[in-house]
Image (cartoon, rainbow, N blue to C red; front, side, top):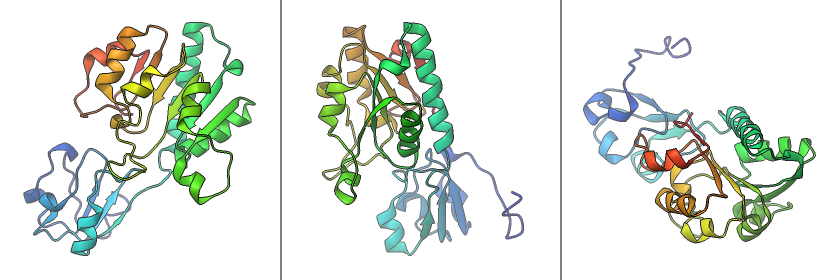
Length: 242
């Protein structure tokens, strides 16, 4: 409010129930990931700029924005430190529960953007063994990257930090499907603090029921704000997309 109050009238509305009538007279729309911003919401409105206070943009219809001449911006890195702290806290909790030595584990980070890249630096700074998988970055730049198959085969801890993409060769929708979940090493810790559908939640529930050696930490869920309560009960830590 302090930043925008000098530019015009500010109206606060619930992001999950936002409708066309609410935004019809707005010039600027600021949202988080719970709001899908697309033609159905914006067509016929005065909105000329959409800002999302998130790293990811899977809730924005960027093709429609381009067609309609709507400018937009996201916030890369806005929550990177908080997510890294969440992962580190989760590791400490898991280590205390299992009596594990965090120095002796191999860590796999899938996605090395703002969040994943920061996590890699922290883990390596602690002197821990870290493998990184990020196919788009591997193509675009030099770096010590490994395949997802190597992550699954070699890592005791896997932390997911990819954007959510639903098409193309780089699709991350159900990146961890039943097949990959079943291939996890005995005793693997799986942490997802990226986007819920990066992991097939139904498959994870079934795999956790079948394999008591696996441990899961989830901060994101398929179908948010609804949560698979049975899956949450199987997780060591289950949090509401902090």
